[in-house]
Amino acid sequence: MKIAHPPASGVQIARPLAPVAALLALAVLVGGCANGQPRPLTARALAEAQTFPFFRVYWVGPTFGRYRLVAADGRAGYNGGIGDGVYYGDCLSGKTSALGGSGCALPLRVTTAIYARHANAQLGAQRNTVLRGVPATIYEGGEAIELYSGRVAIDVRADDLAEALRAVRELRPLNAPGGVVQALPPPVYCPGLTPQRPVAVRAALLALPGHPCQKAAATLRIDRALFGKG
Image (tube, rainbow, N blue to C red; front, side):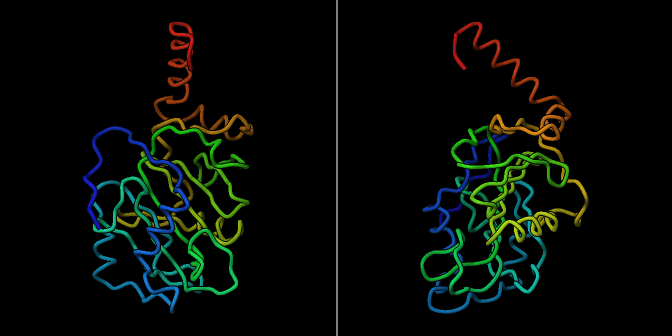
């Protein structure tokens, strides 16, 4: 797989995972899953993921409940258009999941990607909230949660909302020091959330360090006044 170049300085584009791209990435990582269970992740592959150099990547530890870590992108598998992911579990027959194709569904995937402002309306029905102290969006019927932290977006996909929330509670850095703490680092950008923002979400956005949401709103007002757009 072609190795993507390191991100340039500043904020870059990271869109929600397109279903086709996500399935292709998963097929590469856990090839053969349709014909059997994925093999355990080797120590070498884990070490490579733990030294990923471009940005902070999140995981939920070597196991998630009864599921083990079975794949991690690391630098060799990194795709700048998708992000860097870690994958948990065995092929589960009879499960419906966004994590696998027709032959294999994995219970959990956590993907971290550099964020740039995008319209969350494309996610479909969603609910904005605050999780682990940062703004977050719950979508795809509760099977997907996107959290906004630091310079990245963390995308958690599971089989149901309860499992996704449990994974969110266990998020920790994979390639940086630190364990599970109550609050994740706040985002340095203003997430492009839909207008349905509860009071707690609005308060969290207004309290972000450096006031990125206030600056974004001021820029939008200037653009509208000068150019009639935005």
